[in-house]
Length: 208
Image 1: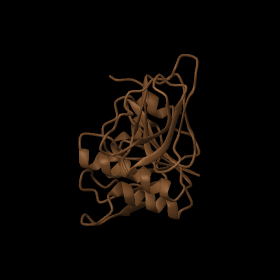
Image 2: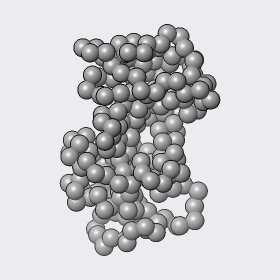
Image 3: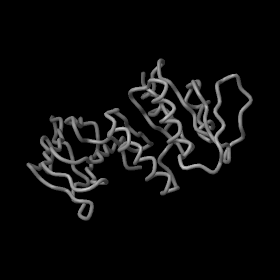
């Protein structure tokens, strides 16, 4: 069962986000993520939040009210709760925005899920993000650019094929992020793999 977590960060291109949703998704709205519900056309399976940024709704949908002082963010709590309920894939939307601290914290959720073998992705108005670790990742030619960032330590044995800037058995450290703004070769599918470590793959659909 795939869980879609909806956060409260801005969404402008609702059409492209809606295209990623499925009728059988388990949809969790987090606090002010509820403001996106009408335009996403996705009914909630669960609502969670401390409701410090959005009024608690009057609804028959199951709602978990969280304390405002806690270790987990609303989004992280939603992920843990969805795991407890049997979700085994995740898509996070509305989690990349003006608050850099929340943005980085939400990206780290991808690392958490990868560490327990759960596939997950974040999509926003411009890009799609996922962790590359155990499995090779493919990037189609419909993406304008793609970047590989090391956000969890040194990564070894990095291979990139089918791209303008290929790599073979390379290393990327957190201190030197040279894997930014690569391009898929025309008529090709780029492929990325890493032998040791983890990388954040950002596939850019458009820049503005």
